[in-house]
Image 1: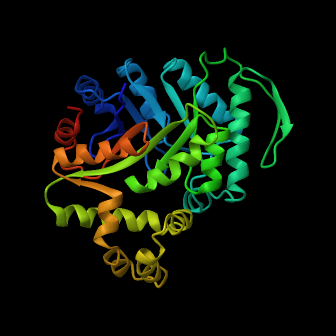
Image 2: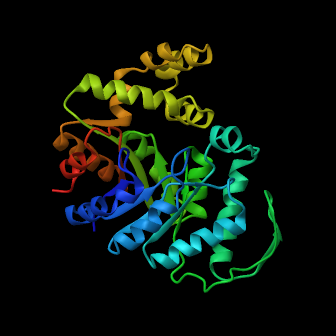
Length: 319
């Protein structure tokens, strides 16, 4: 079954008004709805509504930061959503970034690899119904046990991964990886690292899409979004590792100097075209298929324009 997901909630549509939109997307052939959690809606609430409104759809979070909820609360939230959508929920865990964890939530962004690894191990044990006590490297849990029937089946756990260490962790300890802000060619580099951890790994990729023939407009929107992400230290290191260091050096220098406008303008067209899908709806669908051919199991679209999201959804639907 060829999966195609959409990021929810949709910009410009209040959460309470999503029911008809989600129902239409199911009818159009979208198989998955994926939330995210940064500075807007939390990751769980949109999926709880989707669980009730679209009992056919698979639901995933890409991602919940491993730091911003305590381990027990995270297990409770995951178990509750897995119970609301039995067999249809995928849990996504990641380190997030210093901006979200430390800057916005006042939590030290320390030892991200250990924190993600420990959180995945704890969730596996807690969601199985085990009483968990122990000193993990990055936190301590004393005597936690879910006071509810453990979800059956337990939800798959995917790990958000950028560079090699976390990609290997996703393959060894996770059921797959969640990728973000990468090109088709980048997928060919990172997917084998995940698959080296064992068979049957899922590769979810969040793909930013601007379905418009106005190339200048699409590139302008894409540049602003790329600048906001690629200057976060973890993403800067990621794209340095992917080989974009020389092409993004000018952008990073202007950003560090405080000239945001010059930084945005310094992002080359070719980088925008690699990282942001744009063009006619047919061209966008073809670009998504190239990601699938490169190794993405579940492409998850993220619309970057809010002028008419329902029209964009219809135009990008599977053919």
